[in-house]
Length: 155
Image (cartoon, rainbow, N blue to C red; front, side):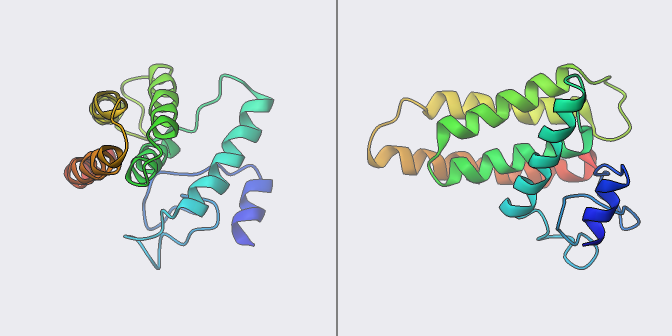
């Protein structure tokens, strides 16, 4: 309920920090700092991003871009490679519109992570049958390691 009030008051998601009011809509980043970015929370925040983009098509929620990339990794893990690739492409487009010195996210590192995941997804998108599940697992496994290495630099 508090997040809905913050959003209605004009607050937008902020980079992860214990003092941030909203990182993802409906997720408690203070109580569960390692597990709060759930698919449902990411989807709720995506609805907010979409609503804001209807008001201003050039708006980009910079702090939300790492979560969208994380969601792309989750989709790839489930074998939804084409949908994951769509998210990676959306993040890449959003990052191009941001200043490289954006204080809300590390644009340079996030761009590199997006390019790496894009490369992996495109490399495995032609896989068939059982190979697709294996490819998705290896894609996400590698992405998870990259994400763990890069998380501290993104936030």
